[in-house]
Image 1 (cartoon, helix red, strand yellow):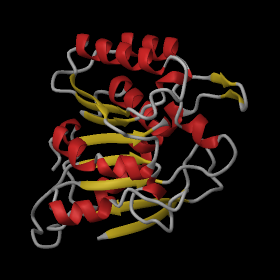
Image 2 (cartoon, one colour; image 1 turned 90 degrees about the horizontal axis):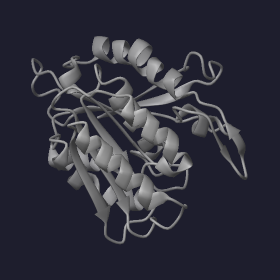
Image 3 (cartoon, rainbow, N blue to C red; image 1 turned 60 degrees about the vertical axis):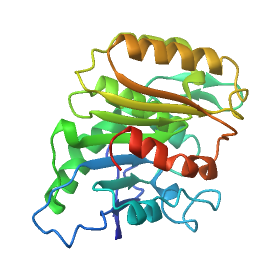
Length: 252
């Protein structure tokens, strides 16, 4: 079952009520005493329904959850459709893009919203296991970047992260600085991948990915790092990777 809420994100664009998608595991009603981990995911509008997706194609994540019977609650958070809001809200640091100008960092406010407002509400309305070991975060592209930030800067709250095609290229030097400042707890898991067909999309992509992977391994992170053969920067390609990352993260 997939439910939808509408709620503002304090400190970002409080006048815009975003859709929050909550996907319950298949056996949720069958086992009324059972509690579940929670996986928070960015770009929620692209996860479940083609009619809601930005480009008319979703991940069809609900179908996977039903077929796999994965025992986890998924919470998808809609991104802002206004101007550069999404880039700003998913960035842990400011940077400049040639065509868009300066992207102001608002990523920390986004993570604080999840921890201070959304997570307490989810934990009160659903049967969750609220501790760090059972709280995960993930996303693709800029959502992959902010997920990497969340699991390192807020490692006391998130134990696992999904970083699909993460936009590390926006400022490799600041990504490197971000990772070097962190001290992840033991048993921190990260799944990070990139499609082979998108590696050439941006300058310094390969170097940024390899450097990030090396730093994470040196930090003791349980890292899965892959190059997806024929993978592209698209919902259709990320959908194909669902069984892989869910298995690698121990969710399904």
